[in-house]
Image (cartoon, rainbow, N blue to C red; front, top):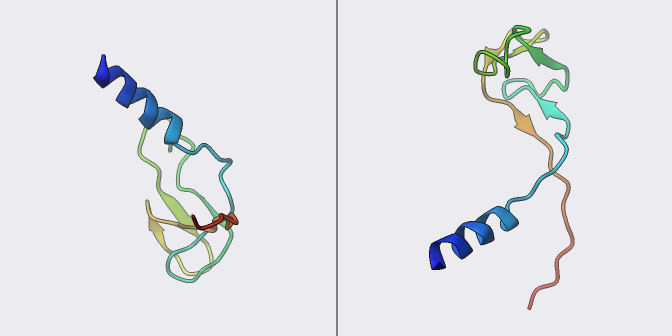
Amino acid sequence: MKIVENVRDVFKALTHHKPSQIFCPKCANPKLHLYSGLDLWLTPQKYVCDKCGYVGPIFMELEKEENKKEN
């Protein structure tokens, strides 16, 4: 069952993390909010930036760097 083992490896490799701070892709404002209460539940996500007026599904996310040793 080589396929089942490969699928298990893929799921193990996925990283699960808490959502970090998100930023507007246009002005880098950290205060984005969902366009509608139905976003992520019934409709695709769409974010709004009150500072520059951006509306769309794209946002920037700040990821923490992990210290990894090179082999």
